[in-house]
Structure formats: structure tokens, C-alpha cells
Image 1 (cartoon, helix red, strand yellow):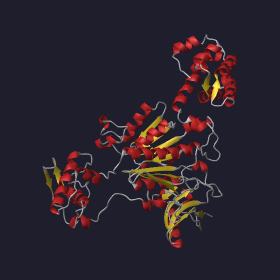
Image 2 (cartoon, helix red, strand yellow):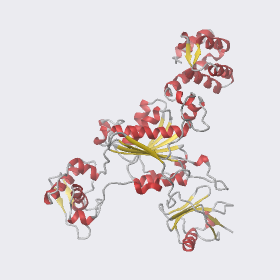
Image 3 (cartoon, one colour):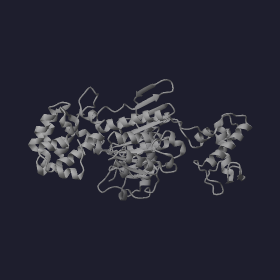
Length: 542
């Protein structure tokens, strides 16, 4: 299909129907027209209105009966029968849209529309309707770093038209070797902003919104707007929070069955050097991230007595410079010209926000050089080798060793899971994909079983009767005393959070009558008892 300028459209208004077809479908001069392109055109004709629906239906029937290509002569005859001067303009505009859509989805149309030997999910029906389904979905991407840049590119080029990206970081010079959406001129700018602008420029038609905020700054309604959340985070704490948030958004009917429309899967990716993993969590049917959080290792942490008295490795020396010496820094011109202050004994570990000190800027080369030089001095004192500037950067900034090719592989696996889930074109991965390129090219996929002791998704039910005049705090104390449990959160059946141990206790002094929706007699509680999670507790009010 081809698009035309306004002057071209004026000329076409006076053409015969046969000439319109020749202009509309340049491939018609050949022997056949690809069914994918003509089928998309037919579907859009049907959706436009009465003026073109008849032609759309006939065209769809022709495509259905013709296999992968439609004879040009048959298409010409059909167009000649239905195209009139009054609808030439409409048809040409539809052709322009169909032409654009066929280019945007040229790689996914065959997957979503053709029957073949693929292992489709149960209920999947190859159809052009799947293209429209994919275009209507909204995806949240958390992180715009090494994985995030690749993920955003993959989502946009796979046909996702509505994307929101969140990242709290700014672009550093060291990012440019693998985070390809950024250039040298972008150093210092928000990653989310630059990534969003690049994607919008490169992938026309993609609507992408960016935020430079913490994920904790957004409320439930913000997260409920998404069909899938895909994350390329660099720490376990953020993953745990996002996992708990998405699980808490599940809604249940009166019989306790989950509402499928409330399910927002989390696709999580991570990479380190030649290794990487991709996972999908479909709540509440799969395990959640917290079920296996203990298997995830974060950066090195050392005992204070070790780095102070008996350092043994290079990282101990860097930790000493960062945690012990930097808080004593009163002023700093450069790494050779600085002034130290004496800190009273017992305050050696005070943080860099101390008013009398120098606030550490991890992106300031002079600050990083100062830490590096002091670490070298400490290493020389204890005859320890291995302190380098790069290692100092990695420790202070918690930089995870990253390789662009590993990021590309893992982000592709994550994006595939998003596309599979949204379209049902294939069965979602059974839990966890692990890639190890350090010892050859090795990968395996396995299922993480639910952990009955998980504080997020473990489940067991109890009932507790109380009075509506009681406060939420009194209810909490009474339940904790009776069942010897620790209450984590309370929320209503419509998913309004009344209390969350992580976020605060502002509602604990309010009465249940003032907090509960009118006519509601049940609260949902998440709590922990002797290692077990108790979920979906009934709090009945007389």
C-alpha cells in the first residue's frame, strides 16, 4: 500500500475505480498481492463504517480463500465493483493507515496471523485482530539502563504502542559503551527522558511517557493501568517492592477466585558479565519474586571490624576509604588538597549527609579519585594488591559488570515473554530462564515452586469477629495477640490499602466504621505466623 500527498488525492478523486486500485495497490501490477497487507487493509475497511464495510467484508473473504497471496486480477475486479467517487478519499486514507501499520508490524504479522507448526497457547487463533490487540496494550518498563535500553527498543519494534518508563538515574559517561540510546551530549541528563525521546524519534507512532521518580512514589491507580510490567532493575530491594505491589493489586470475587483482569504480570531480567536470567511472575498462579529472593545475591558487604582492623582484600581498603575516611572530610579542592576533621569516637560510620562534611557525588571524578587514592594508601599499609580505579568505581557505585551482548540476549528473552503473554501466541515460560555464557553457551529453564513461607504470596485463611467502633490498631493488636502473628497489611475487598507496615501507620487510630466501605463486612489481611503467610482473613463486623 502507498500513501499520497494532498495534491495527489485531488487528482485521484476523478479517477476510475480501476485506476484507484492501481494507485492504491502498486503491487497489483504484478501477479499477486501479499495476503497479510491486503488482509490488514480489509480489516481496517470493515472497522471504518458503512461506506467501506461492504468492500472490507468482500476483501476479507477473498483474502481468506486465497492463502498467502491474492491474485491481482481478483482484487482489481472487487475494487472495480465497489469503489466510487464518493468513497475514494476515505479508501485512500485507510490505505495510508494500513500501509503504515503493515510496515510497523511487518515482523509480527506473520507470527500473529498465520497458522503453522508453532506451539500456540490454548485458545490462540491466528488473526489480524491480534495485531490490533497488541497495539492496544500498555506496558510499564522500570529501568532505562543496560537492560532497559534494549527492552524499550524491543518493545517499540515489536508493536507495543503505549509505553511508560521509570528511572531515577542520570546518564554517566561509563554508560555509553552499552546503553546505546544515549550519546556523549546526553551525559548528566535523566536516562528515562533521553531513552523516551530516542524511541519516539526512531519508532514513529509509539507513545512513550517518562518519569524520573522512585517506583514507591506512584499509587495503585498508576500501576493498574498497565497490562504487563517489565523490569531491568539492579537491586533486590526494588524488585521486592514491585513484586509486593503488583501482588497486592489482585482482586477477588465473593467466592475467593481471582479476577483475571486484575492480574498484572511482572517480567524481570538481570545480567552480570556473561550470565543472565529472565523470569515471569503471573500472580497468583506462579511463585512470586520473594519466594526465591534468598537465592539472589547482592553486592559485597563487610563487617566494620574487618575493614577497620584486619583488611585482607582490595574491597576492604576501598570500603575503609569510603565508610571511615570520607565522613571525616571537611573540605575538598581535589584529591591532593583537602582537609580532614576528627570525628568523636563511635561516630566513624556516620553517613556523607553530615552537615559538617562533604557530600559524596559518585559521578564526580574528583570525589572518586580521592576515594581511590585513600584506598591505595590503605592497601600499601597492609600490603594488599588489586586496588584500581575501576574497582573503586564498581564498589562505590555498585556497578554490576555488564556486557552489551548479554544485555541484548536477556532483554530479548524478557520482551518475548511480554509479547507471548499479551497475544497468547505461545505459552509463557515456566518460571525461570538462566543463561551462562561464561562456560560455553549454557541455558536452562525451570519452575520455581511457591514458597509456603513467602511473606507476599503464601496463603492460609482465618476469621476474626470484632466491633465496628474498634480502631484498626485495636483490631491489629487483638489479632496479633490471639493468633501470635505479625500483621503486615490490611486492605478492603476493593483493594483500598488501610494499613501497610512498610508505608506507615496513619490509619491505626481510626475506627473500622470510618475506614470500611458502606455495607462492607470483610477486610483482607496479610500476616505472618510461625513462618507461614496468612492471606485473605475475614474480619466480620456485627
